[in-house]
Image (cartoon, rainbow, N blue to C red; front, top):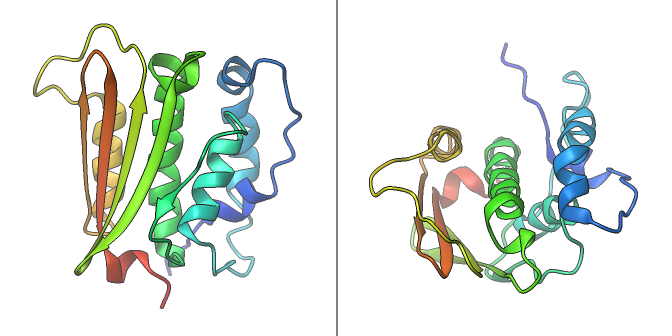
Length: 180
């Protein structure tokens, strides 16, 4: 029997105190606090009916509360989609605090989603000053983990960084991501 862990329920119930410097606070305490709440009792009933916008809003809330979270199509997520998508959003937020928009006073962040036939696309776009860009063709550990997590949903992950912006695209099979 396989045991499924539900990330969204724990993140939605996170009661982290507000801090005057959210990005730094989240890097220092957020991951361990969120992780302790993220994995619920594997024998507890699964919580269902979480939408993509709810999941994204809950994860971004851990980093910075006042962002426009999601524009475009919203879907109810399947239980099996929660963990891979939560991982991808958490990875994007963490990198945004360290290198991107969430770590900059004038940074911008926009997440958009759309249904494109049998696939669901999420575009994460950050504006700001990104300085040096990674070498072409070299994927970091986080990008490789995002690719592997999304494989469960027959999905892909791709990211491009320029000195002015970072854009990441997540594509998943709609039937794998959407609640039945």
